[in-house]
Length: 93
Image (tube, rainbow, N blue to C red):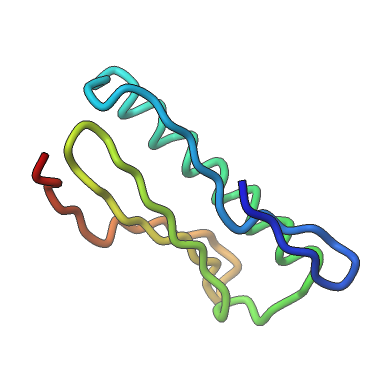
C-alpha cells in the first residue's frame, strides 16, 4: 500500500494484492473488490479535498490470469458514479 499525507489527511494512492498467477475463481471477486476500493477512495477524496465533481478520477488495474485490465471510476456532474472498462491486454508469459 502506498499512501500520501495531504492537508493533515492520509490518502491511499495504491493498493496491491498478490495471489497465484493461475487462479481464475478469484477474477470476479477481485473485480468487485477493486470497484469497492475505488468507491471508498472516491468518497474520502471528495470528503477531504472537495475537488470539482467531474475533475477527479480513480484508475485501477487488475491482473487476472494472463490479462491486464484497466478501469476508471468517475463522479460525473450529475453526482453519479461511473465505472468504465477502458482496455485490456494479454500478458505474454
